[in-house]
Amino acid sequence: MIELLILYLLNKYQLTMYGTQKKIAEDFAIYTKPGIGTIKPALVRLEEKGFITSRRSISNGGRVSVYYTITPAGMEELKRLIVARTSDNPVKFLNTARIKLICASLLTPQEQVKLIDQLKLKAETLYNKTAGKIESADFYYKMVTDNQLQEYKNFMSLLEGMRNGCTG
Image 1: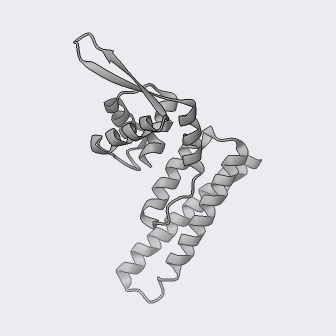
Image 2 (image 1 turned 60 degrees about the vertical axis):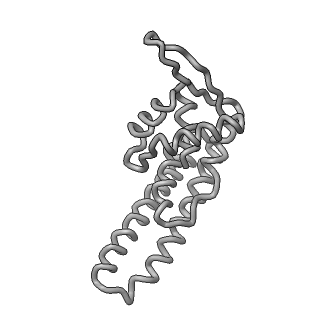
Image 3 (image 1 turned 180 degrees about the vertical axis):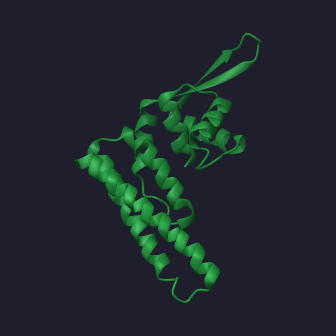
């Protein structure tokens, strides 16, 4: 997911490594908070693959800053990451799906509908799996699980509204 976030931000801004970390914190802190130890290797990987380029600049204070920019290949990779299959891990699903939806404006209307349908199917699958476990559970398990089921319901409702907006 870090590559998705970096490419999404570099599509809008030219950023340094620290600027990238700061912008992720500003825009996506409710979903994730990666540290420099995660961002730096991701920037290296993205540059090695030709998805971003870097430019060194010396500031007024004499410090070297490295600025990153997305390439056309990086833009294609960004779109691929947005529509790529979402994790089967229920812990990661909702946050990853929400981040993908934030980035969905970069897709065509047809790609947006496909993404929304894919996410809705996954949410329904996770909902049904979770609902099947609640019957024989104790009080606390039921309460926590019921909360998770409500999150899935709310998310599916959000997706239905977004899909209607894409097709209506």
